[in-house]
Image 1 (tube, rainbow, N blue to C red):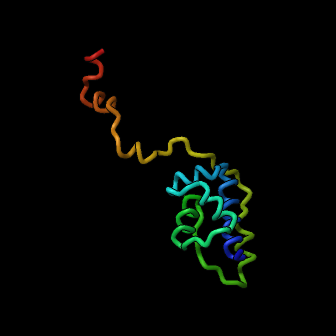
Image 2: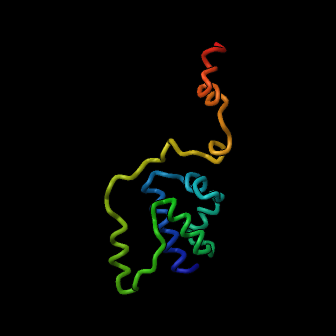
Image 3: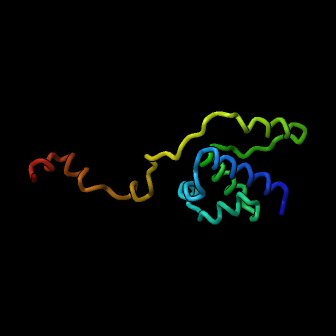
Amino acid sequence: MSETRTLLGRQLSEARVKRGWIAEDVAKRTARQKSRIYEMEGGRVNSTVDSLSEVGAALGLSLVFVPTAKLDAALALTDDGKSRDPVPRDWRSAHDDLFIDDREIDDESGDADADR
C-alpha cells in the first residue's frame, strides 16, 4: 500500500468522522458506492486525482501540493479543535431536483383550497 494513499485516505476518514458522517453520507454527495469510500479511506485503491478532489471537496477539503519541508506544519493545521458540523438534514437528492411535487403546483395555482 502506498504511503501517499494511506495518508490521503486517513485525512478523508478523519474529516468524515469529525463531521459526524458515515461513509454513506459521503457516497450520496459524490455519487460513489460507500464501499469505494471505505477503500479510498483505507488507501486500498489507487484513486484518480479527480476522485480524491471530489470526495475531499464533499468533506470540506482541498487537494493541494505542500512542500515536503512544510508537510508536518501543514498536517498540524488540520486539527483545529472546533466542533463539527452534523449531517445536514436539508440535503436535496437528484429525485428532488428532477421531480416536482404535485402539491407545489396546486399551491401555486390556488386550486389546493378549492378542492378541499
